[in-house]
Image 1 (cartoon, rainbow, N blue to C red):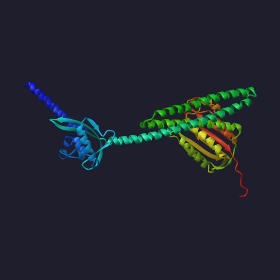
Image 2 (cartoon, rainbow, N blue to C red):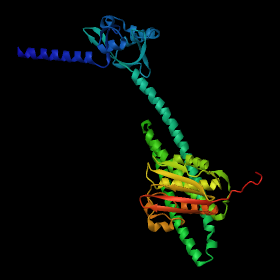
Image 3 (tube, one colour):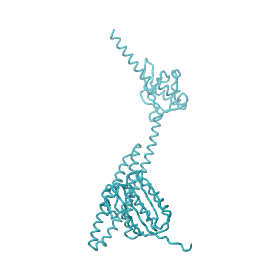
Image 4 (tube, helix red, strand yellow):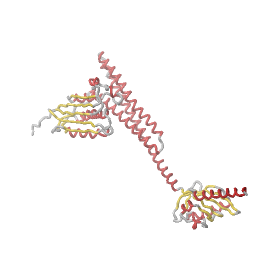
Length: 427
């Protein structure tokens, strides 16, 4: 008797399992008798098509097909009845089903035929692929966007390569022109010794300063090519910004070399004119503010009642850009830079004060020497030409420069530019 009870229990358990799979499946399941009449539909299918169970049972399967496709579907269904096999329906094409409210939605259908007591049935497994199609459409859009970004990056790489070649040619010209001065410097032993020292420090500085940004450009350009996925756009932008910063640094280095070259050859001429120093300095501050470190800001004050003086605007701009750039470079983020101007005794006085690392006292005597860099800033990029160029510019305007500095407390550079405003005798 026990041998008979165990199989019945097993059959009941298996039946419950099958019913659970049918009712709780995430796919729509419809069973059709003779491939036509709906005899079963699980809750997922009912929800998908918007019908109640009482409405669906006995319905012709063709009613779930769009109106314009029903005749075609009927013919296909008849062909399938002759050769019923388990297979997907509508392979390589998108099928659409019809809801009770006459709305259409894309589906994926698999068919599995079976037979019970001579009656033929087919199980239709139906999946609503609306969300999948939306995802695929988004993926297509992202792919197009990625393609455009890759084209932009390719163009940027070409532009950068062109700029690097151009800057390299300019540097080669500077190196060539500097080497031509060797014959003049070699007239005396002391001058020859000075020339060799300058040349050695120049080559060392140039090779060191160019190696870092060029290495950054090459490595970042290489890494950008690897990030081809849409979600890696942030990484691409990061390396593109590194490339832009490196090119800007190369430009700064070349500008220093070219400025020194022009000053040495006497190409730069002092062209004084009557200017409003307060307005001029405000314009300079506006131009340089975007290149300051994060959180740094400039505080500018003019302390004199008069704002009229005589100076060369371009040379004055070059001087202040150099001094303010140094104040930013050798200060931490979020530190202020204070600029004060005044006019007294026919002299324009401008000071630039920072709260940076300061200059060690033993190094202060060499501060305006060409290629000299203080011991505590060797890890910060620079050519050692900036203050030497500033001094030459100021001397060109018959002025002079002074400074005060304390280690780890900051530095103040003050320039003095004399001028004489001629009175208009016609007044």
